[in-house]
Length: 211
Image (cartoon, rainbow, N blue to C red; front, side, top):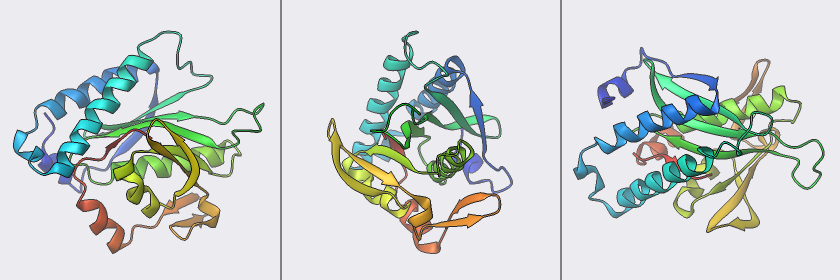
């Protein structure tokens, strides 16, 4: 089990790497195992229970969908794992925009799941996705589908709601070039990490979302 002490160790930076679908599923199982070992006392607050239930829903959906050999080929889906001290703390499934599709011109975060009591790993994964999009000459624009409780979090990341919805989620879009939450640097876009954003996110111990 990964401990909060390990998560809080500032000398242990997070590492994001691209993996195969099979490796993503292995890391997903490791994150699920660690989550299952958390103390049940963490679920006393109704909002925490909701986030825990979302974690279960999301991890189960990823497992069910991507265990199918016919789904998620590397031509259409790319898989990334965020790790600390070699232990997985988050995964992201990135779906590049199709050059042949004018109706979906933006890259998409299909799923993202981060370890309970994470320290902003969701933000790191989003920043990685933005710059991956830039490297593909797609301008860094992203879309995702956010659960109702997670909408304020993504608004702090610069996402804005659209008029589209999917299975109870809201489709949100990020255009970093037009957002005051992001800084353009010679090395790509950087998410502003203001004190207010950090304090806001610290109240969300369960950053586990279907996006």
